[in-house]
Structures are given as structure tokens and as C-alpha cells.
Image (cartoon, rainbow, N blue to C red):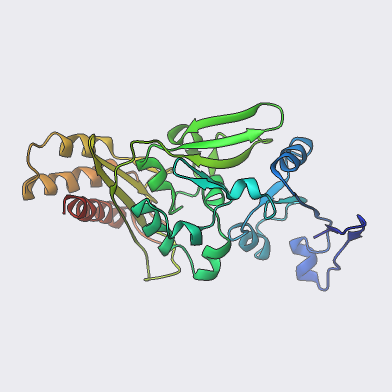
Length: 294
């Protein structure tokens, strides 16, 4: 990685063996430690292909196993504007460690399941959003809350994008090359009764096989899931079914669980099968709905 010191001098690492050279080590990587948001946007406008680096908990894994070798990196660690958090907005640079204390119960629950304390101390919600992995643990909460993604570029200024228009596929978004995710905008009507849970292959440090958020408010139940489709999804048919019930009975909950299992669109991969994901989605959604009722 090439760094720029106070005097602007470039530092170039040496490739010490054939494996490192094959992985791209020893090649020049331009690095800018942006000091504020304006500097970030200017750098991104000048070099739209530059890779943004916040916590680095996803990017550095890919760099270390030679899946990616960006030639330009913009560090966001010094950009204080991205660390601001209010009742209606979470800055993209807010870490999961801070979100463990969120007033939004399901978001705090999700934060506590992410990685290790060391990972949560540096990983950010903006990284979760911009990476757009179907297994991103913060994304079902964003979907259930009907939150919007705030992005900015030097040329076009700010855009506020509904979550279901921002996430377009597996690790794909509607973000333009020169845009930066600056935060998550939270509506005023997010229900206070909300629960999160996920299923993984072990109890900690795990990528979700299925994750789920259920909220219950004046508009009824909201149910969002992750790892069961190319993007986070709301299971609207299951929501409508449960919200139409005058009284939530055992039979109603069984039917709700069945519809959730039908409505998700999972795949079979190295972590789980389609069938198990369907089953787990229905079970999780029902359990969380029962918690919200309680």
C-alpha cells in the first residue's frame, strides 16, 4: 500500500516472495486519509474507482486472501461528520459498538451479535449498507424500519434513497461511482416493540444463515429478513395475513409462519440449504412475533 506522509512522500512495500507478487503485493496502492466529508467527496469525484475504507472488516479480509487489490483507497476514519448520530439519523461511520446502546431495541440486539468486540469497535453501519451482503445483520432492521439510505456526491449533492431501491442485488446497490453513503435516515413512526434474532452455524462470530426483525406498531406487524434473498426483504403477504387477524391465535401464528417460509427466496450454499433456510425463516418470524405480542 502506498502511503502519503506529512511531506507527501510515497511509501512502496516490497514483494518478499512469489505468492505475494501473485496476489498483487508490491504493487502501488494510493492511500488518502480524508480529513472531512468535503475532502472525501472531492477525492471520490476525482477517482470514482477508489475504494472507501471505514472499519475495513470486510475489505481487509478480501485483500488478505487476494480476492481484491484496490489501486486507490480513501480512508474515512478521520471524517467526524460520518460519526454523528441523532434520533432520526445514523451516520455511516457509527460503529456497531455504539449501536449496542441504541434506543432501537432490535438494532441494538443485532449489533451485539456482530463479530467480536474488536470487530464491533471498528465496523460501521455504513460499511454494512454499502457492502450490501444479503447476510448483513443491520439490513433487516433498516427494511423493517422503512429507513432510507442517505448518499452524497460532489456534483449532485445529497440523495435520500428508499431502502428497497438502494439494495438491488447480491452486493449491488444503486450507488453511483462518485457517491458516498453518509447515513441512514430513520422515520418517526418506527415501532418501539421490535425484536431481532438470527440463526448461524455457531453461537458467535458467525455469518447469518437467516436473520429476522419483527416490529409491532400502530400499523400492525412488520417483518423483514436477511440471508433468504438477494437483498433484505419484507414478507408483505405474511404481514398482511397477521395484521388482518382480529385476535392472534395459535392457528394464526402457524399460518403466519407457513406464509413466511413460502415468501422467502433462499438458495442452497456452503452455509445452508434452501429448505432449512425456509424452515428457519418461518420459525424465527413466529418466535419474534410472539415476543412482540408479549
